[in-house]
Image (cartoon, rainbow, N blue to C red; front, side, top):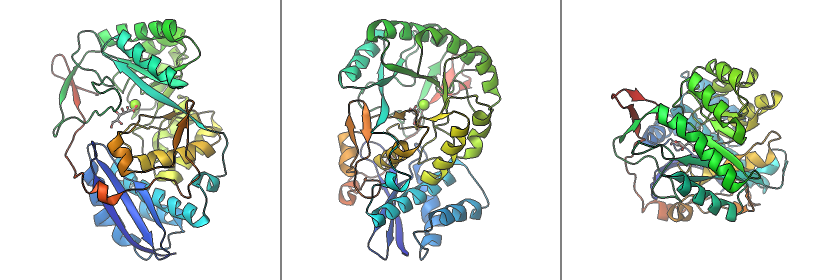
Length: 402
Ligand code: GCO
Ligand code: MG
């Protein structure tokens, strides 16, 4: 089966998405997500200018070979732009292979290991009360796991707390908006949120929290310790993971489970953290970590060390990534949880999909392939808009992790 054409579709139904469409001489096509929030056009160019010309005429069935060709063949390995492009090709090829077989993708990955994929929703608010009211709404809708984020006393804005509760969008300006961050009040207030949450929501729901790379290792260790009484499902991105050894220090001090890896794009980013059992959940996902092929390798390594998956699923990843991730989640033995921030209606209309939510779990559906399509006419009505992720500064002006 030969690849006859491939092209990039950029659309912005409320936020930017980059999609790769690969067509074959047998009339089958496949779709892959290539979205890298705030850096969308670099991946679009990487695909259009460097990858697509080398794909035409290739056998669409040789997924692993094409993965190796793009990974090793670039010479410049890894990195989010390169790997998002590789991911898009890989996802589209798996989509084609499953359509050719007439099967939902999870069947090609070994079949279902579970009946549905537990997801976590996002409850946030300026105050603890507001956050808990949001969380109660998730419980009422049947969610089994909820991430809680709340405003920090004295700070005007905080990562994870948004005006629009349904559809969180951090990339809010053409150039980065600037926020002020202070760790001390956050450190003091975060445990209060979880104390109140356990009192109000009870102990049956899984609670999660994202520190979004803003703490030093020793600050993270203290937060993990302070949160221990509330038995979190995980504390996410406690400290930046470029230096995996930093997690040794956190681990020495706390039994709060740790999740890391939404910004990882390769198994090598995750290797030390997994092999030294410094984390409990690996957050890498289809679109940034080399597609289904790259993610399966990471998950297999993680399984050897008792580390479970917890794929990134923010709304800046398109429904195509979500669909593909759900097939992966359903079939991987060491599944932990899947992040699920609902997409807006406009986005869902551009990307019709087979996945569905039921009683706290998502199921990818039985459509052949990954089950997510694109309405190109509708997509064309939403042209690209330049948007950047914000930056943080400390109160004295020093740039800090956002
Ligand atoms: C998460 C993430 C996101 C990121 C976003 C950046 O846990 O879902 O931290 O909220 O900030 O994906 O584009
Ligand atoms: Mg996160």
